Length: 229
Image (cartoon, helix red, strand yellow):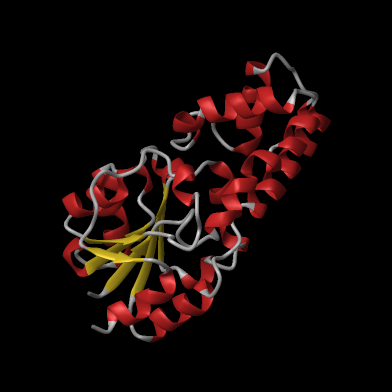
Protein backbone atom coordinates (compact mmCIF):
# COMPACT_ATOMS: atom_id res chain seq x y z
CA UNK A 1 0.00 0.00 0.00
CA UNK A 2 1.25 3.47 -0.92
CA UNK A 3 -1.56 5.60 0.51
CA UNK A 4 -4.08 5.66 3.34
CA UNK A 5 -7.39 7.48 2.94
CA UNK A 6 -9.23 8.41 6.12
CA UNK A 7 -12.78 9.26 7.03
CA UNK A 8 -12.95 12.33 9.29
CA UNK A 9 -15.71 12.39 11.90
CA UNK A 10 -15.38 9.55 14.39
CA UNK A 11 -12.17 8.38 12.75
CA UNK A 12 -9.63 11.19 12.96
CA UNK A 13 -11.78 13.10 15.44
CA UNK A 14 -12.57 12.06 19.00
CA UNK A 15 -15.68 9.84 18.68
CA UNK A 16 -16.96 11.03 22.05
CA UNK A 17 -17.12 14.65 20.85
CA UNK A 18 -20.06 13.93 18.57
CA UNK A 19 -22.33 13.72 21.61
CA UNK A 20 -21.93 17.47 21.99
CA UNK A 21 -23.14 18.40 18.50
CA UNK A 22 -26.71 19.23 19.52
CA UNK A 23 -25.50 21.45 22.36
CA UNK A 24 -23.05 23.14 19.99
CA UNK A 25 -25.99 24.29 17.86
CA UNK A 26 -27.68 26.09 20.77
CA UNK A 27 -25.66 29.28 20.44
CA UNK A 28 -26.38 29.41 16.70
CA UNK A 29 -30.10 29.04 17.32
CA UNK A 30 -29.99 31.80 19.93
CA UNK A 31 -28.17 34.13 17.53
CA UNK A 32 -30.81 33.49 14.87
CA UNK A 33 -33.62 33.99 17.36
CA UNK A 34 -35.17 30.54 16.90
CA UNK A 35 -35.88 27.79 19.47
CA UNK A 36 -32.96 25.39 19.84
CA UNK A 37 -35.09 22.28 19.37
CA UNK A 38 -36.69 23.64 16.18
CA UNK A 39 -33.28 24.60 14.79
CA UNK A 40 -31.88 21.16 15.61
CA UNK A 41 -34.77 19.45 13.86
CA UNK A 42 -34.31 21.50 10.69
CA UNK A 43 -30.56 20.94 10.67
CA UNK A 44 -31.08 17.21 11.04
CA UNK A 45 -33.71 17.09 8.30
CA UNK A 46 -31.58 19.03 5.83
CA UNK A 47 -28.37 17.14 6.56
CA UNK A 48 -28.36 15.12 3.30
CA UNK A 49 -28.76 18.32 1.27
CA UNK A 50 -26.37 20.41 3.35
CA UNK A 51 -23.48 17.99 2.92
CA UNK A 52 -23.65 18.20 -0.86
CA UNK A 53 -23.76 21.99 -0.92
CA UNK A 54 -27.42 22.53 -1.80
CA UNK A 55 -27.70 25.53 0.54
CA UNK A 56 -24.33 27.10 -0.20
CA UNK A 57 -21.83 28.26 2.40
CA UNK A 58 -22.38 28.59 6.13
CA UNK A 59 -23.95 32.05 5.96
CA UNK A 60 -26.35 31.13 3.16
CA UNK A 61 -27.19 27.85 4.88
CA UNK A 62 -28.03 29.48 8.18
CA UNK A 63 -30.17 32.07 6.43
CA UNK A 64 -32.10 29.30 4.69
CA UNK A 65 -32.50 27.25 7.87
CA UNK A 66 -33.70 30.32 9.77
CA UNK A 67 -36.42 30.84 7.16
CA UNK A 68 -37.43 27.19 7.51
CA UNK A 69 -37.78 27.92 11.24
CA UNK A 70 -40.00 30.91 10.51
CA UNK A 71 -37.35 33.56 11.26
CA UNK A 72 -35.87 36.31 9.12
CA UNK A 73 -32.64 37.35 10.86
CA UNK A 74 -30.99 40.69 10.22
CA UNK A 75 -27.46 40.80 8.82
CA UNK A 76 -25.97 41.39 12.26
CA UNK A 77 -27.80 38.34 13.59
CA UNK A 78 -26.41 36.29 10.73
CA UNK A 79 -22.91 37.56 11.50
CA UNK A 80 -23.27 36.32 15.07
CA UNK A 81 -24.86 33.05 13.97
CA UNK A 82 -22.05 32.26 11.54
CA UNK A 83 -19.45 32.91 14.24
CA UNK A 84 -21.37 30.72 16.70
CA UNK A 85 -21.80 27.93 14.13
CA UNK A 86 -18.10 27.86 13.24
CA UNK A 87 -17.14 27.88 16.92
CA UNK A 88 -19.57 25.05 17.62
CA UNK A 89 -18.24 23.04 14.70
CA UNK A 90 -14.74 23.29 16.13
CA UNK A 91 -15.96 21.77 19.40
CA UNK A 92 -17.06 18.54 17.69
CA UNK A 93 -13.85 17.91 15.76
CA UNK A 94 -11.05 17.66 18.34
CA UNK A 95 -8.37 15.16 17.32
CA UNK A 96 -8.64 11.64 18.61
CA UNK A 97 -5.97 10.98 21.25
CA UNK A 98 -2.63 10.42 19.54
CA UNK A 99 -3.94 10.84 15.99
CA UNK A 100 -1.75 13.80 14.98
CA UNK A 101 1.38 11.91 16.00
CA UNK A 102 0.09 8.88 14.10
CA UNK A 103 -0.41 10.90 10.93
CA UNK A 104 3.10 12.29 11.27
CA UNK A 105 4.50 8.79 11.73
CA UNK A 106 2.65 7.41 8.69
CA UNK A 107 3.93 10.23 6.51
CA UNK A 108 7.45 9.66 7.82
CA UNK A 109 7.04 6.02 6.81
CA UNK A 110 6.36 7.15 3.26
CA UNK A 111 2.58 6.89 3.03
CA UNK A 112 0.55 9.46 1.13
CA UNK A 113 -2.45 10.46 3.25
CA UNK A 114 -5.90 11.37 1.97
CA UNK A 115 -9.29 12.29 3.39
CA UNK A 116 -12.88 11.80 2.28
CA UNK A 117 -15.42 13.51 4.51
CA UNK A 118 -19.17 13.78 4.28
CA UNK A 119 -19.39 17.27 5.72
CA UNK A 120 -21.26 20.53 5.58
CA UNK A 121 -19.73 23.89 4.80
CA UNK A 122 -18.22 24.51 8.25
CA UNK A 123 -15.44 21.94 7.88
CA UNK A 124 -14.64 22.95 4.31
CA UNK A 125 -14.41 26.62 5.24
CA UNK A 126 -12.33 26.03 8.36
CA UNK A 127 -10.08 23.22 7.10
CA UNK A 128 -6.88 25.22 6.46
CA UNK A 129 -6.80 26.35 10.11
CA UNK A 130 -7.23 22.87 11.57
CA UNK A 131 -4.29 20.82 12.89
CA UNK A 132 -5.19 18.09 10.39
CA UNK A 133 -4.65 20.19 7.26
CA UNK A 134 -0.82 20.19 7.11
CA UNK A 135 -0.78 16.44 7.66
CA UNK A 136 -3.16 15.42 4.86
CA UNK A 137 -1.92 15.37 1.28
CA UNK A 138 -5.27 15.27 -0.54
CA UNK A 139 -8.77 16.15 0.61
CA UNK A 140 -12.21 15.40 -0.79
CA UNK A 141 -15.16 17.10 0.91
CA UNK A 142 -18.70 16.10 -0.04
CA UNK A 143 -19.91 19.70 0.34
CA UNK A 144 -17.46 20.86 -2.32
CA UNK A 145 -17.80 17.84 -4.62
CA UNK A 146 -21.61 17.84 -4.68
CA UNK A 147 -21.99 14.17 -3.80
CA UNK A 148 -21.62 12.02 -0.68
CA UNK A 149 -20.31 8.58 0.23
CA UNK A 150 -20.44 5.93 -1.09
CA UNK A 151 -20.42 7.74 -4.46
CA UNK A 152 -17.59 6.31 -6.57
CA UNK A 153 -16.54 9.79 -7.70
CA UNK A 154 -15.24 10.64 -4.24
CA UNK A 155 -12.90 7.65 -4.11
CA UNK A 156 -11.71 8.27 -7.65
CA UNK A 157 -11.04 11.91 -6.82
CA UNK A 158 -8.94 11.24 -3.74
CA UNK A 159 -6.81 8.57 -5.42
CA UNK A 160 -6.23 10.88 -8.38
CA UNK A 161 -5.22 13.74 -6.10
CA UNK A 162 -2.88 11.44 -4.21
CA UNK A 163 -1.37 10.27 -7.48
CA UNK A 164 -1.91 6.58 -6.71
CA UNK A 165 -4.16 3.83 -8.01
CA UNK A 166 -7.16 2.89 -5.83
CA UNK A 167 -5.67 -0.58 -5.46
CA UNK A 168 -2.69 1.02 -3.70
CA UNK A 169 -4.91 2.65 -1.04
CA UNK A 170 -6.29 1.60 2.28
CA UNK A 171 -9.54 3.27 3.29
CA UNK A 172 -9.90 3.72 7.06
CA UNK A 173 -13.20 4.71 8.67
CA UNK A 174 -15.68 4.04 11.45
CA UNK A 175 -18.32 2.63 9.11
CA UNK A 176 -20.82 5.43 8.51
CA UNK A 177 -22.31 6.37 5.14
CA UNK A 178 -21.68 2.89 3.67
CA UNK A 179 -18.13 4.12 3.18
CA UNK A 180 -16.39 0.75 3.31
CA UNK A 181 -18.56 -0.80 0.65
CA UNK A 182 -17.88 2.26 -1.46
CA UNK A 183 -14.16 1.86 -0.91
CA UNK A 184 -14.29 -1.84 -1.77
CA UNK A 185 -16.20 -1.14 -4.98
CA UNK A 186 -13.68 1.55 -5.86
CA UNK A 187 -10.83 -0.97 -5.55
CA UNK A 188 -9.42 0.19 -2.20
CA UNK A 189 -8.72 -2.03 0.81
CA UNK A 190 -11.17 -1.05 3.57
CA UNK A 191 -10.25 -1.00 7.25
CA UNK A 192 -12.91 -0.61 9.96
CA UNK A 193 -12.15 1.38 13.12
CA UNK A 194 -14.65 -0.18 15.53
CA UNK A 195 -14.23 2.46 18.26
CA UNK A 196 -14.67 -0.28 20.83
CA UNK A 197 -13.44 2.01 23.61
CA UNK A 198 -16.25 4.49 22.91
CA UNK A 199 -19.58 2.91 23.97
CA UNK A 200 -22.47 4.36 22.01
CA UNK A 201 -20.30 5.86 19.26
CA UNK A 202 -22.08 3.77 16.63
CA UNK A 203 -25.29 5.72 17.33
CA UNK A 204 -23.74 8.74 15.63
CA UNK A 205 -22.91 6.95 12.39
CA UNK A 206 -25.15 8.16 9.59
CA UNK A 207 -26.34 5.42 7.23
CA UNK A 208 -24.20 2.66 8.78
CA UNK A 209 -22.43 0.27 6.44
CA UNK A 210 -23.77 -3.32 6.38
CA UNK A 211 -20.50 -4.44 4.79
CA UNK A 212 -17.86 -5.38 7.37
CA UNK A 213 -14.25 -5.35 6.13
CA UNK A 214 -11.84 -8.19 6.82
CA UNK A 215 -9.43 -5.73 8.44
CA UNK A 216 -10.71 -4.34 11.76
CA UNK A 217 -8.92 -2.29 14.43
CA UNK A 218 -10.48 -1.17 17.69
CA UNK A 219 -8.63 2.15 17.68
CA UNK A 220 -6.34 4.02 15.31
CA UNK A 221 -3.32 3.36 17.50
CA UNK A 222 -3.37 -0.18 16.07
CA UNK A 223 -3.06 1.07 12.50
CA UNK A 224 0.69 1.63 12.57
CA UNK A 225 1.34 -2.00 13.48
CA UNK A 226 -1.10 -3.11 10.78
CA UNK A 227 0.83 -1.21 8.12
CA UNK A 228 3.98 -3.07 9.09
CA UNK A 229 2.61 -6.57 8.82
